[in-house]
Amino acid sequence: MLNYSSSEENYIKTIFHLQGEDGNVTTNELADRVKTKPASVTDMMKKLKSRKLVNYQPYKGFRLTPDGRKVALGIIRRHRLWEFFLAEKLKFKWDEVHEVAEYLEHVSSKKLVDKLDEFLGFPKFDPHGDPIPDTNGKMENSRQVNLADWPVNKPAIVCQVVNQSTALLELLQHKKITIGTKLEVKKKFGYDDSLEIRIQKQLPVTISGQLAQTIFVNHG
Amino acid sequence: MLNYSSSEENYIKTIFHLQGEDGNVTTNELADRVKTKPASVTDMMKKLKSRKLVNYQPYKGFRLTPDGRKVALGIIRRHRLWEFFLAEKLKFKWDEVHEVAEYLEHVSSKKLVDKLDEFLGFPKFDPHGDPIPDTNGKMENSRQVNLADWPVNKPAIVCQVVNQSTALLELLQHKKITIGTKLEVKKKFGYDDSLEIRIQKQLPVTISGQLAQTIFVNHG
DNA sequence: AAAATAATTTAGACAAATCTAAAAATTTAT
DNA sequence: ATAAATTTTTAGATTTGTCTAAATTATTTT
Image 1: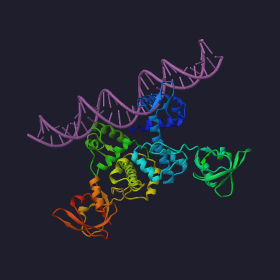
Image 2: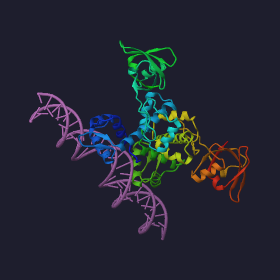
Image 3: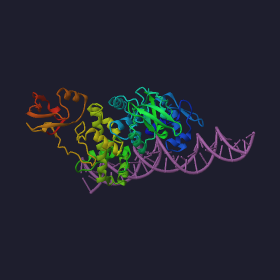
């Protein structure tokens, strides 16, 4: 696998996140996300097309090629492994890991990344609950369902929390909810969308609809 | 502290290593070390001078300013901490850590570095035995004496091994010598410069003068 | 001390990644 | 279906770090 500049990697990674299952990415969208101007995006797309990492027809938007997808998964793997390392080993808070991982992800030594993975015990999810691709780019497709949409009495494992504000973090800590917490929704109150949940064998607690919307779970 | 590009950092770091206690660094010397051309060095020196990191008079060579020295110590701190991490935690071999650390050293988040330091237990020496600067740039001045010059019957701790070839590594492993090994020189043979040493309470072993010259020790 | 040699700097160019302003293509609205 | 608005691309400049070739300064030799 060849080596790409930090800048190229940022574009590739961002295209991966923006293009869903299908659907093309547009110039303005991407310019917004990588914090640059549309003209710069066009320039970069020409380059990435010439490297056969994106399919790109002027004015038509773009998608990653299979090769581009592989590169993207490699970058995402590095990013999420470093996030895991920062949170788990260096005791960074959830809302602090992303920024630093943005830099570490561009150190692309395969040996480093694979040894880091091993050192961390081959984690499947990063501290936000996003799945971590393995060496071959495979990862949990992790049907992560919003806790607000989770059915009653079905075992769940917390695997992701979006929007890591300090206030949210505090609340989660108080409710004893963290990545990996096993719980069940016991009751749903339509009036204010609040939920009653039970964490393992403990007494049920109530959480607000707003809080529930920040929590994603897997079937546990 | 401001942020510097990887390229600037490589120059700063290299000047630090080349300028001893006194003495100026010359353009050719530096060009050699950073693997570039003398003209490029001149360009960079103008820039670093304008940032007040080096003292530089055309044709006269250059030295780091006190500010430049601080920056250099920060880079060296990061480099050596990552080397320690790679060797200690990820089980890289001694001769593999340097290359990867060359990339990691440019990730300059202070929080990251200080937390890494803490995670590693505030190590004083990197895997090659070079002292690691602390947050304030202070480090062991580590009177590292060549084992060939060490007096007989004085306790020593191995703290550095230079020139990490695979062959050397193999030999050291066989003799059970590694960073931290406690030993004493029992006899010196002037004829071929070989030494008889005793590692802790074990039986004395003989090592060649050539090998002894690659080993540096502290008083233990 | 002048000539030869070596080291360093200047001048001008180039590639990567970005930008602004203007032009072209596409989409939306009438 | 044309006009208006939006999106995207092109053209030309800028910055950083590099290069080659030529000019300049310093050092060494004779």
